[in-house]
Image (spheres, rainbow, N blue to C red):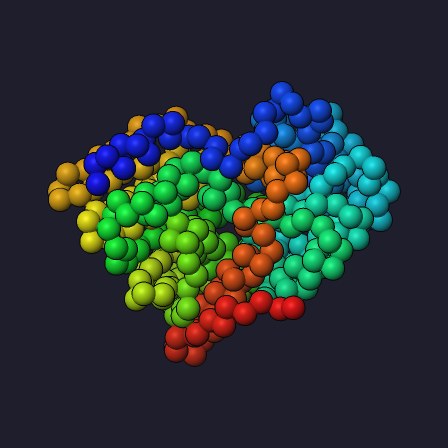
Length: 367
């Protein structure tokens, strides 16, 4: 075990997907940013700017004041959503990044697809499984590339975790535990992000907004998909009356591997992923939040090794990957079909919470 583990510590933050030299790229991918909430302004736009393969050229939002402010701050073209959907400035961007409330993804992605633009859509894909399928079909029918914003997949710590699991450093994986929680109305602010509390816009809260992170990251690291899910949700406070405040869910993977996950929008801030095998435990803690440095450790036989590595800007890595794959004419790993597997699992967790029965996943994608 020691030799392969040591090998993976060298050049820990390497981009194992990068084949292009930024200096050889004549022009970056020009991106229109749709949605100027706190995440886009504080993380996505800086990530686009830091990436050598991307450049933000257009921004839009239903809040005209936000558009004017960001356009001035970033020296980009600010337009209304109607102008963007109509293609009025389509010659100013090559791709569209959608970071609006879940239930509005479909309309913006469809418009981008009709304009022949590549798409990076935030996760979860949409507020419902049916609308997510329609979104993926819109891109497929138009022949445009669709990537989904699973920033954990381009974080080097997660990629090294996957490498170690594949190399058998943990032995045979037996089970996985993950948790993600926050005091949403305190950490994100009580005066915004209220769409997460609107079931029509969000599709749910704890499971949809947070649960997708452990779900997708575990799928990515294990390299396989769940075959059955079960879950339970509960709500205690009035602010969350229409959505799930807390949730726990179980993912059953092939080979008898179980993943137990807990998520909450109103609990002590926490973020952890632990993979336990026959030979060792692999731990990310903190794991899922973009605003926290990731921690990486291996525990074997009572001896723990904490890995010290240079942290990366998660959104820089995500947009660098997005731009790189477009310029290199290479496919995305987290594409629409990949994201639909998450949507089916999320839908199954909610169904199980209602019926109190486990839900089998078909694994079948629409034609």
